[in-house]
Image (cartoon, rainbow, N blue to C red):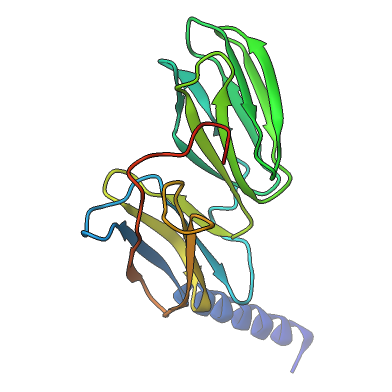
Length: 213
């Protein structure tokens, strides 16, 4: 076989392997419900394949936790480990954002409308947020090291795209979940195509106090 023929054969083989790899990936649809079957919003769903790998969700952002109408928006923000989150003040009043969470305590001293501060989150875990001026404000940043993650909306559903076939750990975290870590995890095997899974969790009616998570 000539060198050119070998190159053609190698190229063809790579194309076939690439097509096979794509065929072995699928979308994983997950719905989170409570004990009565109602959708649970603000749940962070993760999937960590046994073989590792970087998923489509492991992107650079931008990640934003805004202050608007004397609230944080969104209530739950999931970010990959090492992400930088911006905290723009979109209100007409000043805010002082803080967290006492062990994963990464920080303070963003008083700043006004139209101003932005940012924090890089180096460690995985849960960051409970509060405002030193407005006690009613609370929110959570969930820092994950899973390559696939998303946060449920009103319907309790998410879709993780291009998840590779094979086993892994499917995790669910929600700030009101009735477990010691506010999280549950289970083994899950992804097939060669799309898959769907429903996870039932027990949640509290009342949220923990801001900043005390």
